[in-house]
Image 1 (cartoon, rainbow, N blue to C red):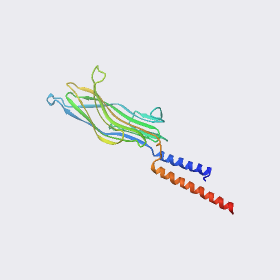
Image 2: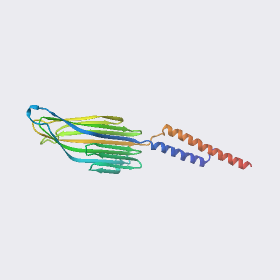
Image 3: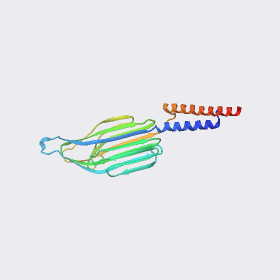
Image 4: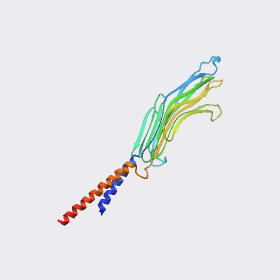
Length: 250
């Protein structure tokens, strides 16, 4: 019969193995935009106006947050209003956000047992010549690997043609997103100018969220390790009992 000490030893081994299985339950998500550019189309070649576009950067923002729960109150966070990369991490996850001067941006979030969220935003103002169409484009890639949890990743171009005396003008956008797996493609967002020069805004954004939790049962490799550990513990207990028996009968 197993002693109380051997039972305690076996329980400790089981807990350690279960913890090793839980550590692998990491959710990961990422989103990125690169190769941003645009194409101009002359909608009225006979008007004598050369198509033109002026872009002005108005705002830069990146953030990454880690949570002890479902995106409730961040325990670790960082933000930036400049080009470059920010990164935060703790024992339960990590997050990063990167913004580049060529209007590329990316975000990533990893969560071991809780939640992580990262995002980037580049805001631009554009001035478009009359009778001109602009086609904004960029390469986007998003990835979401929930493992044991929830993930979401999004990359998009969001724009609006300004309309005087109206709170919201004509909106246009292009978005790529995923909850599971990898997606990639070319984003294409179109805006047109009428008879007069037109002003508008364009926002280049990425967002990544991950939430992870400990699986209710160990994964198959952990089960095998647990079984092997318990066999070793039981064998050691039998050897100790046999040694005690031989000593007592001597």
